[in-house]
Image 1 (tube, rainbow over the protein chains, first blue to last red):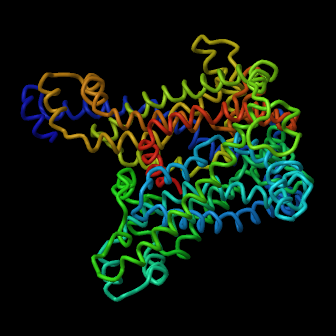
Image 2 (image 1 turned 90 degrees about the vertical axis):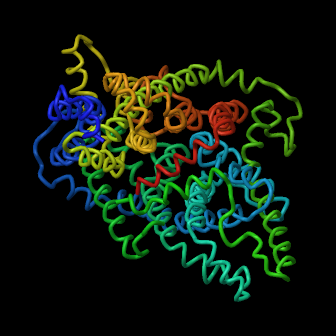
Image 3 (image 1 turned 90 degrees about the horizontal axis):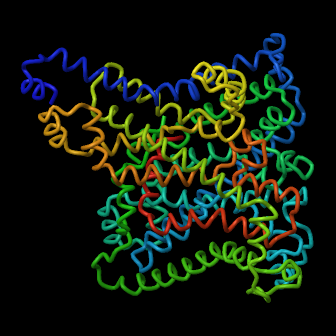
Length: 306
Length: 317
């Protein structure tokens, strides 16, 4: 291509045209690249640098690994923030995957209004988390719609679900499994549609029933899909912030029951102005997420071609 | 990391067409029709049930947004006993959601425009212009998707407080502050997702048209503006819609950087409201409707562009 272009422009010669194209290329990507370097790449190193100082409003003395040692002994971080985040992840990921797969299989049937149903199931993923959390707070209030329905079914529950220590986190798990199931559905749909049709034709000739076909063929063939959805889901779950911030307030209440690691970091930085310490939390979380991604790979097998 | 984990773009494209995948169509084998019919009936029942479950929270919030406060505590009724728009009136005027809506529109609008420009310009260069180190730079861009926001919080906050005001001061903009709306916009001027979508689209455009432009001795910027941009409509639409949706809904960076109430976005306004006056349900539901409605409209009108976002999300992870 470049050669063909250059031939037409023999006057200028090959070299100068290439140089010009290269310079223009750098010029066009200069602004985005400067942006990514300044606000994405550089902050990785800068976060680590900050984390080695007792940095509050102003940069204080160098403390080496001091902030990390403090973090290691931080009771609130481990027994609330980390614990809640792990519990949340352990429950929400399987729920999201199961719901996403179920919805995907259902809307993958050749029936009418399929497009409408896909859209309807996907929409909660697109709506503002703040609005959804507000609606959930309303529905799960002490005299809310959910308790009213339970009452008519014979269960009497008079507390607000988000206000009670024992039910706050499970309620958030349920809420987020619902809102993100649409996204997981679309991922699974893509994976389902990558399965060749002749595999199913062979199964049908063998007289395999629907459930057996799903269990023996669809589910195993979805392995790359499972891996992909699991990674996306776990990475999202360990970074949960919005719902805790909206429902539990900045403190992750009631009594730390909805405090997550990211909300804890936010509080240390924005609430307590402990920048050095918050940066250390950020570095540890980043290392953790990175490790999770690496570990998940062999567990689910390599996702070749999904 | 993710490039191989990505559902192939082709498969995702198929979603938009809503052709059923294998295993569900009729197999042409006699005696299977009855089983198929039962399965179809079950699928219908499940879908309507689930769709109803998905819709109820939204419909219930709309219903409450038109109630009086007394109506919300007067026991269950499907529809408001007395229809009123006072919830919206209070949300707009008493609780400043009119201002917050404007703020959300300004922030989301500015970030969207900037993404459209920078991502299309950069995407064109990454797709079409040859320069040393192009592939490495592009991998670097995709790599930024793996850097979580929480790691960036402290460094970016300190940069916005300590460095950026000094830098723009040299450019003649004195006493600028970035722990506000300006900062929220500045740190989201372009995203790797936008750039990726634009590049992928430009790669699919045939080269003949550019060759013609080259013969006319049009410069590269002119080729970008006059030839490539007009052809990139679908990609620009996808980038614009996804960026707007993401920034309209966003909570994290506004929660970090917006401290002055006059600059709150709708999500921050809602967070603040929930903490302060939780049980004033009609205005809170009105604010929620306000947050959801524009996105619902965009989704209904431009549904297929959201699929591109799912494909791009595959780059993450």
